Amino acid sequence: MRKIIQKGRHDLVSMDEVNIALYYKLINIENLLEIVNNKPEHVELVLTGRYAPQELIDKADLVAKMK
Image: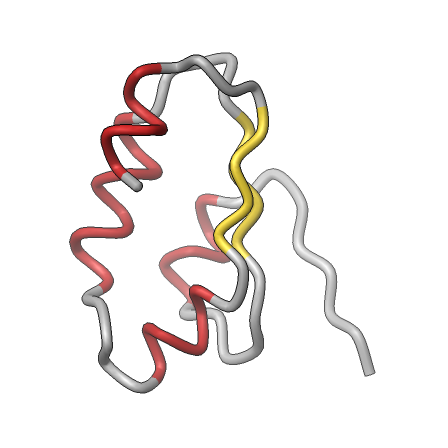
């Protein structure tokens, strides 16, 4: 996923249910934050799933909470 984002060929990349993967420790927050922090300027990331960690919320341009 990191290589796809870094190449910058796509304007929008959706990482569906990535927050659940973080919650269950399938991926670590440091790696995801590195991707978010180093993405090309024009690339929009959509990170979905419940239990979003505060570190990601703080970096977000938009946060939606569905109930």
